[in-house]
Every structure is written in structure tokens, then in C-alpha cells.
Length: 310
Ligand code: UDP
Ligand code: MG
Image (cartoon, rainbow, N blue to C red; front, side, top):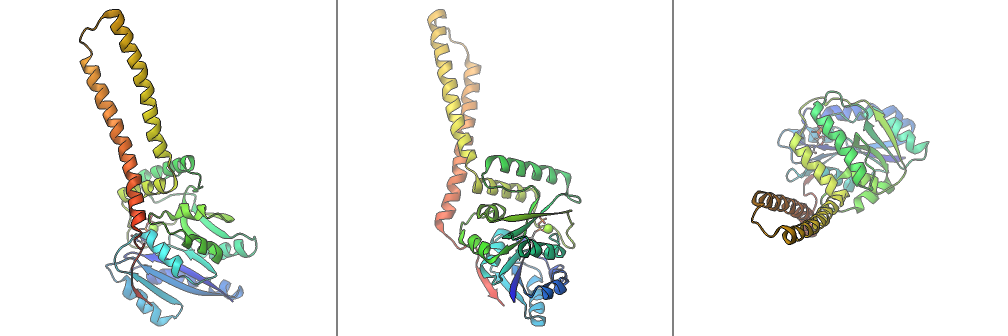
């Protein structure tokens, strides 16, 4: 017998709690055939609706259901990490409560590990139908940029939904950084991964928890966690403007020697000062961003705080 843990991060998902339970257990015959026991671990990320009570109902009905409830909203990344820390399974999968990560893919994912010898089977959506076009556009650009500036490969449309072996889960749990970007960490720990593709599924019930702005901030998080290219850009700007300044200096000296020193060029001087000032502030900002990440990292606060455990 091997144990499979499904981790379901939930933030105000009262409508979806029982649906995802049903959908996961629709694979029951497959699980029985392969001798797999199932546990479903709901990680309540400080929901303010009935999510916790709904899960409690399920735990009473079915001993395979577990609940981990946070003291407040810590974010999906924290919920994923908590789930991975607490899951006992030999195989572990993270899946969204809203059924955008189809549980019907599980048999295929298990087959990739059992039959094809992979350590993990990840999923990516190849379409983004049903999503606002502007969101898709920036998401695509983000993945493209990420692939260029980071050594860790992050697939376009990659989901957090993936099935992993115990060995890989332990590796991920050992990555204890505070500013977490799971998609990057999954790739960073290595291991042989098979990618399954699927057409985007729209959220079954409720609403997305991510505004456009929170996604933009999340993408910065990802870039800073997995690339130091912005810092190199800052140094490059400094280097570039040193050279420009040097050339300008020579030009000014020669002009003064030939034409004397008439007072002119005030507008250009002001433009240059403002421009360089802007670049300096930008570079300082980039530096500050990384510094703030380091600050949060050295504080070494726990990634999540548990209020209740069933
Ligand atoms: N989620 C969470 N904490 C948060 C935000 C979201 O645990 O602060 C969970 C949410 O309940 C869902 C999953 O993360 O199970 C994905 O969230 P959502 O569907 O809102 O994101 P989207 O699919 O729109 O990117
Ligand atoms: Mg969703």
C-alpha cells in the first residue's frame, strides 16, 4: 500500500470544498487498482467564510480528510508549503480548490511516475480561454522574460498542480526561504519531470482571489527570487553612464579650448541632471527591493502559523 496526499489550499472556497473532494475520489477505482490509499489535506488560508466548517463536516464523515487552518491569510505560497510539510504521503499533489486543476488527470500523472519512471508529473495549460486577454498577454510576457533572465526553467502556463514523489517533496520542504515562488522552487530542486498539457478549465464556483495588481506583484516576487539580472541592469546603467560622462567631459574640454567658454547649455544641463537622477533612483530602488527581501529572509519568521489541526 502507498499513500497519496492531495493538498488543497483554500481561501474562501466554501462552494468548492465538497466538489473537489468528490472529484478526487472519482478516481477511487484507479487508486484501488494500484493499491493507493488517499488522504485529502485542506489547508485553510485564513478564510473568513464557511470553508473551515465545511471541511470539518467532511472530516467527521471521512477519516481520510484532514484540516490545517491558519491563524490568518498567509497567501497561497504559504499554504502550499504548509501542505507539503504536513503531508505524509509517498506521493503528493497540490491542487486548487476551484477545480482548475482537473483531478481527472491524476491517473495519467501516476502512470508517468509508476510506468515511465519520472519523479514528478507537472501540468501546464496550453490555452487561457475564459481569462481576460490583458491578463493572458502579461502572463505570457512574464514567462518569456523569466526564461530569459533565470537559470531555473519555468514553463509557460505552468500550474502549481503536480504529483511528486516523497523524495522530491522532502527536497522542496528543505528549501525554507520566506519569499516563496513555488513554480521556481519545483524546477530548482531538479528531478525528472514529465509535463502534461491540458486546456484551461474555468473556475467552477466563486471568484478568483488574484487581482491584476496582485499578480503583477507576484511576478516581481518570482523575478527577484530566481534572478539577479535586475541588479546587473543597475550596474550596467552605472557603467554606461560613466562612459557617456567621460566622452561628454572630453567634448566639453575641447570645445572650451577652441571656442572659449560662453555660458550656454542650461536646458541640456538640467535635462541631463534630471535624467541621471532618475536612473540613480531607479537603480537604488532595485537595490532596495533586494535588500528588503534579504531583510525579510534574515528575520526568519515562520512561513505560516497554524491555528487548528484535524
Ligand atoms: N488561495 C489561497 N490563499 C490565497 C489566495 C488563493 O490559498 O491567499 C488558493 C485558492 O483558494 C485556490 C488557489 O489558491 O484554491 C488558486 O486561487 P485562485 O483560483 O483564486 O487563483 P487563479 O486560479 O485565479 O490564479
Ligand atoms: Mg483558480
